[in-house]
Every structure is written in structure tokens, then in C-alpha cells.
Length: 148
Image 1 (cartoon, rainbow, N blue to C red):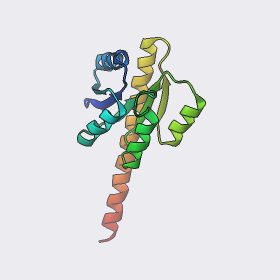
Image 2 (image 1 turned 90 degrees about the horizontal axis):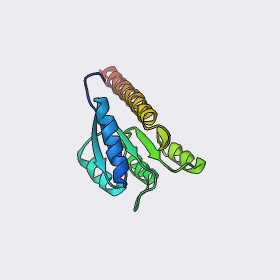
Image 3 (image 1 turned 45 degrees about the horizontal axis):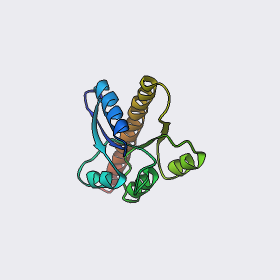
């Protein structure tokens, strides 16, 4: 991943959080962030642009973060998904993980530590996802070559 920008789709209906995420991730220098104001808007963006990771708020009008996750998973999209929320609920966290989510991060605490954690989680989940995708492609190639 070194030298390559990690493409991030950030979904949040609050301008304050969109600005904060953009600011902190741009400071890191390893991320290219696209912001979206809603779940429905993000689905339109995803039709045209691939991303390495999606970060979404939970509580949003029309479509919450888990609904976004469920929809993209139903379309076969395996892009890593991080729920970044002020909603602290074991039920929400359970639904998120059962729906194929990767990390559940609370919007609280020291901003520098919080965004350091987010950057670390992004790198970890993107690296794991890329490794799994490469392994799948490798195994598919082995199967293709074994038929000759």
C-alpha cells in the first residue's frame, strides 16, 4: 500500500463530521477522501467510483449506516466498512457486525487519538481486504490452470 492513496468514501449528514474526517485524513497524506451527505447519495457515488474503504455514520435521514452496508453487501460489494457513530448500542453493533461490517468506532474522546485509531483501522482493514482479494484471484487462477 505504500505510495498509493487509500480511497475513502465518508458518509455523514453532519457537515462538522465530514469536515473533521476530511481534515484529519488529509493531514495523514495517505488518503483520498470523497464525502457524501447521505446513504442514498453514497450509493450513487459507488455506482461510478470504486473505494478501498467506506466510513459511515449510523444515524442519517432516509437510510442509516447499517442499511447502506446491507445494500452494498447485497450487491456483492465487499469493500471494508467502518461505522463511525455517536450511537452506543450493543444491538446496533451486533447488527452491524452480522451484516458484514468491519469496525465500529465511537465518535468520542480526544480527536487526535480518535483519528489515529481510525487511520490505523483503515490501513489494517484495507490491507487485509487486499490480501484476501489477491488470495481469491490466485486460487481462481490455480483452478483455471488445472483444467489444461
